[in-house]
Image 1: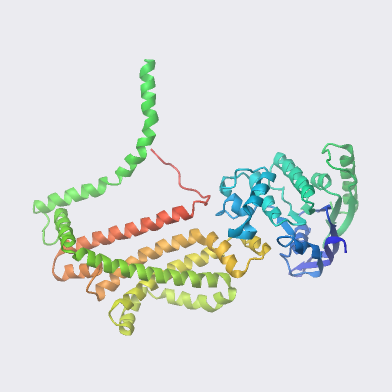
Image 2 (image 1 turned 90 degrees about the vertical axis):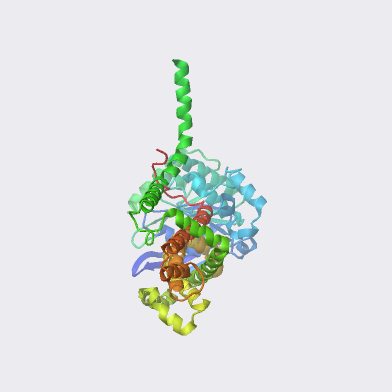
Length: 243
Length: 276
């Protein structure tokens, strides 16, 4: 199998309310895939299943054995909130997976990568929202993952910070050859970042559409192609009654 | 004129630096006034000296106690009891509180019992402890440990149950074992509550020390209290009360300093209106 991560025929219910029905998706190496949908459609639930945080579902989760060759589980996760440990310094948060025996040089390198060089000794309370999310990204990268799962990671920051963080993630994913599964409700974000956009909708949610984004990187947010693809997607969303 | 303004400006700049020192001193005004008033009232015979000794006499009593070495014997005995009782009670509370906080099942089994035990005023244990354990050190330390246990246990349990589930999830994401989860996430996150509990427990420990020593002891500050009563020496009683206040405040300050150091990371409201 070539996919790094495969979700097959996922069914999920919360107390008899069916949330996800027969959702399948796969993530190939180096690929950036977005899961797009309205809030409450179960896209975050799907990501939590992929991350192993939710075991109570029906269907199959297949992880490529290659993932186990890394330092950690081979999967890094960034949540909507930074979720840093407030009692640990920035550097300790980045190296959280290894606790006392964290690889300081690698932590330094990651802090440099996310633009927080020299802030390793700061406490989370001294960071802005965007900086805290950068630390969370560095923490997710610490285990040298091959898959990065992002759960609306840019939704809590302002528009300017969001654009910077989006570029940062794409750049780091390319540099460290990481496949990305991104959950978002932001059309612009989905098309700007992804190779494929999966649209989730309906009650219970199913995969409605899969749209490829055949544009090379680096992309221009203002480009006519992106605008065209977003328009197409909107049309399809209306047609399939997701919106 | 301009030069004068500059001078005044410089003075004004310096003032804020003075203010904290001034406001620290303000707290001394009332106690000093009371002491001076008492001294004059007793000396002028308005208050009978055999009931209300003059502050200077209390000071003299303390000095004599210190000189004869009696003071250190009593202080030592009391400090050891509080130290041992508080440490044992708090340690047990941390272990059991963590366990109950971690496991719903442990909570289901243990919580009702603890709630029932907590409803017993702890001093009611004294006769039983004396019957079971005799009148030496053991019942005193057990009583103090009993008093220290519940504040720590309750605060820690509440602290653990208030931890942001999202942080615990990060721990699960990194595959932490239960023990590592406790050490690396639950205890640090519950630390603010734990310190609140510890400080409450410490002041209760002093209270229970006095109770234990009043009843059966040959040494300690509580003994000094009852000795002063039996020999009709209010100066001795007041000296013991002062020592208890001093030790209570001192031990709480130590704990508070530790708390401030350990909780530097906390991003919480520290109170407004400083200065002025």
